Image (cartoon, rainbow, N blue to C red):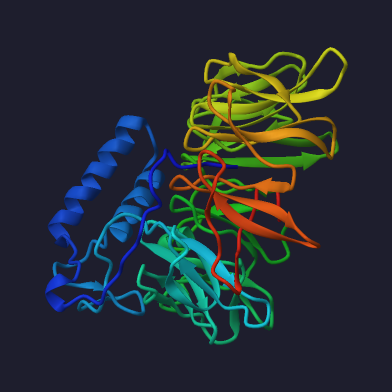
Length: 443
């Protein structure tokens, strides 16, 4: 997807080595408790489960660096005295780059193309809040802050390796990381400091989300749910299960009649009264479901909220109050448009391809047949083109902080640049570097 900037000059990051008096200090235990109470109250008012509450509290404490006053996260994730911390609470507005193929080192630049963190990592992820996940050239892995220093180092016990690569800030913030044995290939969980928290006897172990994770015992095919102590969270097991989102997980069974799915809450109770042929996860309080007699969206209680018309071929998750839907036209060709939360078509299905909205913008393309684009660019929420992209543009990403990555043909190869709301090139990579971006739909 794509996003752009509302005529604002690119943000410039400037970082300096702080004196001890300038170091960011946590608000202390009292401040942390107060902030957590606010998070719990918000969860209660919104009707979320305690699993979601616990997840929000953990995020608040990690993002705000809630630790004893005057302390900070040490290099192993433990509380220690201040070393060097960020001077602002907001996420650094940086772009990830990678050096040329010969060196392969990753670093960060600001929106003016100025190098902020010199390329010295084997991998560098996007900043989520004040941290980004990175892997050093010596295979050190963990969270870095906006100065490029290690805030939390992840220690993997000898004889094990990280199963999901790359890790994310969310996986580490949830407290437990899935690992796999080098010898037996059985799986378990480890803390960021290297303490194995569960028995390593699973044939499958998914990342934790909202305080819960799905695991599968060796020799078994069904998934069941565990808490952060490694204990079974509730009875029941399923042929397949997906991570919890907004207090709901998608679970399913498969038998001679086919696959059937439904939503499950964090207490192990089914949501709604029926199984579906197809179920999506929740986004903005709604989830797409489909059966022979119904295609539409349900709310968090499982009640039918939106009924899609018969000509609908597919429907995506909601983003910024709108969802992409595909519908057949009078000639039988599928075109994509957008509906709002009431199910009303607010942008008619006229596009060959459409991405979900972000920062008020969405990338769309028109064409007579697949692979043949006649017009593409960014539209606003009224379906009007804000800017068109040139024919040599082959992909557009998601907007973040007002800029969007696009991929362009260049000679026999390609290059990635960042454009603003008008489609103007706002940032080019420094000489000898290229931006590393994963575009929607790419593995």
